[in-house]
Length: 102
Length: 102
Figure 1 (cartoon, chains in turn yellow, blue):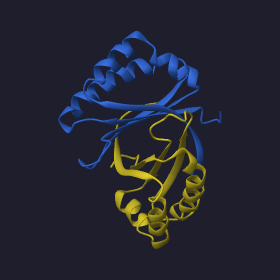
Figure 2 (tube, one colour):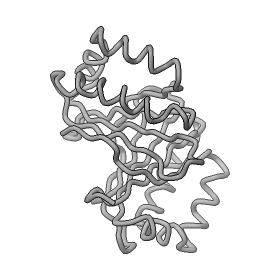
Figure 3 (spheres, chains in turn brown, cyan):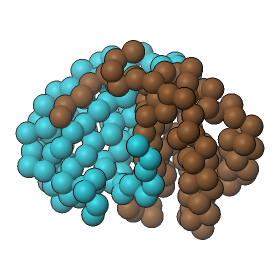
């Protein structure tokens, strides 16, 4: 684990007419996640072009995979994710940084 | 445009046996991109799980969409991207940050 901790990236496929409501739900979920032990930061990215295959991409950093997974197991988060999955296809995964330029 | 500039995210689908070679090619391309005007930073993320749908996700920050697109138009970059597309499906898009917690 580098000092980058671990990166959690979730790539979403969502119909355009569901985006705004999804983002509101995501904000509520983020309020829970940010209080979890090991949370570092999160950014929700919205594609500028309406033609983008992935209109939303969430990039978060955690101290460890365990911290991230534990937070994701919170009952309120689980319930919120389940309801989000009715409108969006989520592709969550944990990543390490393998190359970087600043 | 917030002070985040603009975020360029490229979500890659690549066969596992092509990953290492792809990353080497990506490193060469990144050497060109990092010298371009308006470049801020870039991180290439590799999925920890071999089952991840998107084994590689590139997240870069630029001063503007124009700077990012201009850099992507560099002949050597165009040639490198074309060769990369023979092994990977790329999903590049520009994004704004719509929610953030630190």
